[in-house]
Length: 194
Length: 194
DNA sequence: AAAAAAAGAATGAACATTCATTTTTACATA
DNA sequence: TATGTAAAAATGAATGTTCATTCTTTTTTT
Image 1 (cartoon, chains in turn yellow, brown, cyan, purple):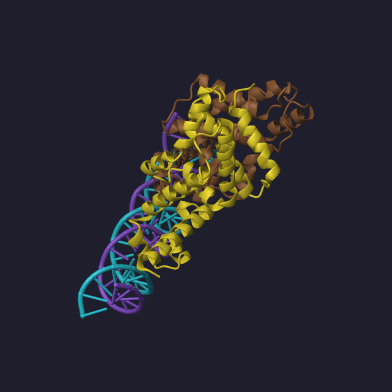
Image 2 (cartoon, helix red, strand yellow):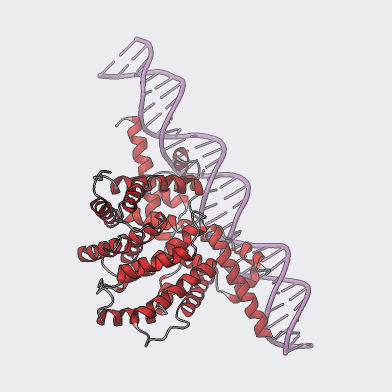
């Protein structure tokens, strides 16, 4: 195993441990020592990869966010028709939230908390541009309601976070039927009624 | 001032300080000493009113949640027509999130975090029943889509939390026009299309 | 064998909680 | 009304722990 490779493995283990522990206990209740233990590393080693605890959590956030958007736009082509493009992206996002549950939960916690600093938050947002562009086109073509991006996001995308959270708490199971229904609700809330 | 009254004032000051500090710094970064200082009280005094820090934040959550639902259902009458009832409740909730911004933000942070223990979370949910009953009736009357309460909540109510959060971050201003649009999106997403 | 990476133990600060006193309140008595 | 006093409320300082971070030494790599 090459030197660089080994380092990356350790770094990844640290990020993974951070996600899992913060998800279960919250930022305030996850000591560096526990993160180190879960990553099979000495506490001191963390500081070879990250400046401090805040830096660790910021970097974790930005990386997970990048992974999320990469996944979301994987098969998307900006020339697709608006409705098809939206459906594709929406379903990829839903997929991510179901399959990469830990990652998605971590993002949700960061997004609703002053845990992350503002700079990292901005970094995270940047990757969302293709969806905003699609909406822009949709509005121009009269397919999407002429609403601000924030409103569209609130109704079309954000509910998925709530549903994932609820599922995680065990209150209900988000199966394929629910997902189809959720998609219909999402699309209903932003499409121009014909 | 009667003895009891004075105590209540102090308790309220503690709860208020908790909300403000947790909103701005997160649970992990608000020491009891700061809460005490902001409430003009000695740290030791907190322990006359609450068992410990966890108890303080749990009780704060349950009380704010009760205030929220009381506000939401203030003028609601279970005999109203479904659409009118929903509109009334929705607008009260929106109102609360705009006017009692600190309270609403605190709830959002608690709801997306392992900060609160499960028992208190359950306590908080109980108060929502009138809305669930209304939806039940709406489904029976064929006015509301036959979806699980969780899905309806995700699309009809939860987006308001996201919008409030976004406004708090300064990214955009949630004015009356936006609110009307948001209401239309909420209703579109859960009503049966005619 | 020099350099890099990693480790475990040590350090010092921050913090939740408790303790020993002081202050305030409630109220009985004159 | 004024005064004494026991109980309650409140306090600031102390305690002991937890934890982020650093230091010194050991191990691994080249």
